[in-house]
Image 1 (cartoon, rainbow, N blue to C red):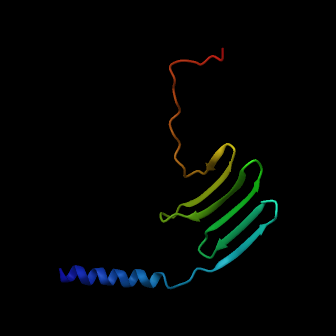
Image 2: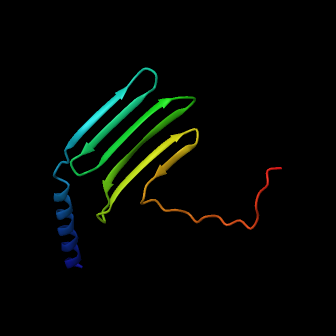
Image 3: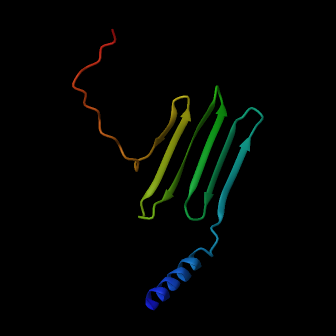
Length: 109
């Protein structure tokens, strides 16, 4: 039991040390106007980037994306649009559902 406690304390110290180094913000640009249009774009020193632009047009319309490296070392890039058609993300890492195979064909009578 004592060995487990010592091991847990050692792990806690190692993990705490890794969070002491601040990650620099390399870019942080933001704009907005009185008509509800906005943009923002930022990037951090550890490779995280995020951007978005939007406006009011019978509801909110936005588009943008972000990129980062996953814990497995895989680069992730996601883009999206959102508006009247809903939120629509696009990225190679996103799962793809099965193609529906209907036993009939619809007719528009």
